[in-house]
Length: 145
Image (cartoon, rainbow, N blue to C red; front, side, top):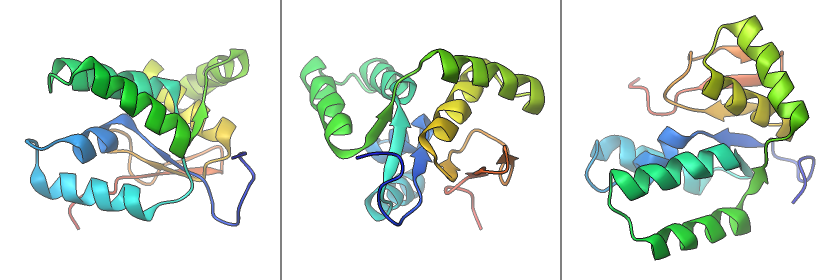
């Protein structure tokens, strides 16, 4: 799958949404919403950073087995477009940090989403409604209406 393929816009899904989707013990309503969002969204893009953050949280907070982490990694690469950090993404993240006053890790998420051509970033952790570079809108899909 390439970043420009298909008629649908690419959607980047941040770590916290994945963790709710995989959780059996956290906020059940948010878990159901996260699962429905992932099932109903296509195409999805994420970065190696998101995979790393999901894996470490599943290992430490949810005591996932290493075999489950390997299956998850394979599944992510099979189903979704994965953006790997490179020099351009790291440098653009620096520009984003300066321009939007976001954290180091959030700037990498934003830079990766932009590099992929995503138009929506689903996250619970950033400023709802903020548009980055006139291309990427931050949306909190778990926000109570």
